[in-house]
Image 1: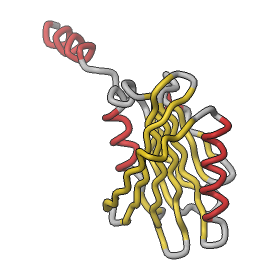
Image 2: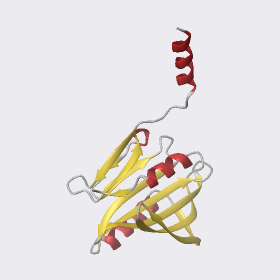
Image 3: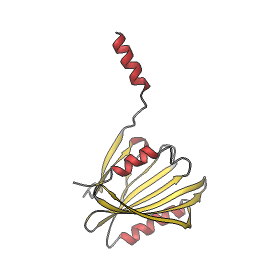
Image 4: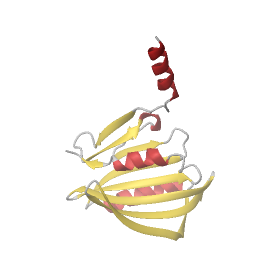
Length: 163
């Protein structure tokens, strides 16, 4: 009996692990997959997937493009940010590259503001297969994004080409 009680106390002392959904998108002809915590309420869109952290401090979307639609997808992402009240400080632009699950990723990052204050903004580009491009849009409240660091890391590192 003591063992069961001790095990129950131990289990209650562990941090809660949120459930997560792995989404393949687009669902009719998957190009990529990503795992996003359920409390971020991931949603498949016409062009990919998007999600918001439970406290609305972080927004992320991943849209699928090809050679013909890539300019439109990037333009739509910028328009969405503008309509959402995000103001980008173009003087803060930083560019970097990295490899993510065997895919080369180019990142463009800026600082800016929205109605709640200072934010970080990012557009990233990664090709999961020839002729296809994923455009990742990121918008996060500064000071809050650190609290979501482990979740964000887990989300981004889960992005993989569909099998």
